[in-house]
Amino acid sequence: MKKNKFVHQFEQGTSLIEILVAVMIIGIMAALALPNWFNYVNEQRLNQANEATETLLRTAQNRAKQEAQAFNVEFRMSNNIPQASMYRNNGSATDCWTYLNSIGNQRSTRDNCLNLAEANRITLSTSYGNRITFTDTGSIAPTSQLQPNENLSFTLTGIPNTPYRCIRIKTLLGAIDKGKDSTECQ
Image (cartoon, rainbow, N blue to C red):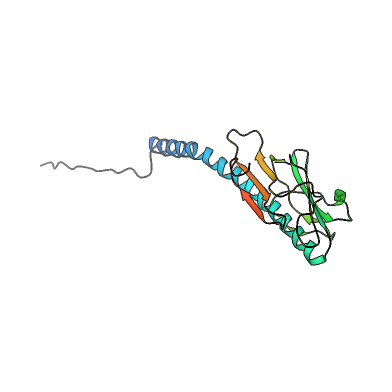
């Protein structure tokens, strides 16, 4: 008598269709997340430049008080990259230009310069002036180009709905305020 034997064979591993479905799901998720990731990275770049600027201003203000002499902080755009220079009032900005980003913040070998790393695609707007002078007491000098409530604004170039950051020195005593959008920076 013959017995009917059912042979069960299980194939191990994954089929090509299962792999393709998994790759498609990962691709769709990446396509949905990518614009948000780029916005996040761009905002971080602006935040770093803003933090570096605030650090530079506070450093100049503190050194002016410590050394009892006036310090200048000057800003410019060079090759579409924002740069800053911190120097004593009797010095010059020509030897001290450095790029705005928060990677650095170490003093350079020159005692009166602050070393900052390069930033990409960040635009600095200095519509009120490009130099802030702190007196030996740490307050804003009357001859300073940037006076209280005038902004240093940062934006990213070539990006729709670009994020916006600014720094404002609020009082003659040098209190610093940061803004995160165009309404806070007007």
